[in-house]
Image 1 (cartoon, rainbow, N blue to C red):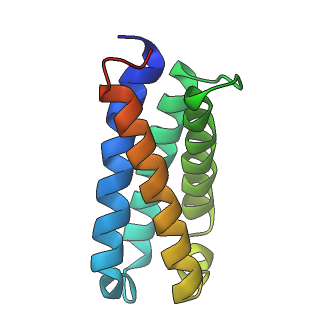
Image 2: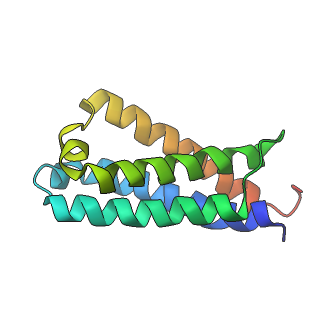
Length: 121
């Protein structure tokens, strides 16, 4: 199995689980302590760094979806680590949040299909 497929096999299901669970439990994020925002940022930063260290390609085809997700995780995590209060206050409106979750769900489904489809190389 190639590196993009291996990363997609982890990233795709994770994006699906995150987008669905956050859509179903959006109300729990209203009163999250700043320390948890910082911790979540640290985890996102490490995940993004791991993705970019193993896959940093801007080529044609589906594997290119992995690189922006790595940058999104890295920069979003860094923002949450450096300014946790600001990250907590900058929650987008419900419609925008739902749109972002839908986009992450679609990317997660595409990556999962590509990672686990034997016919696709």
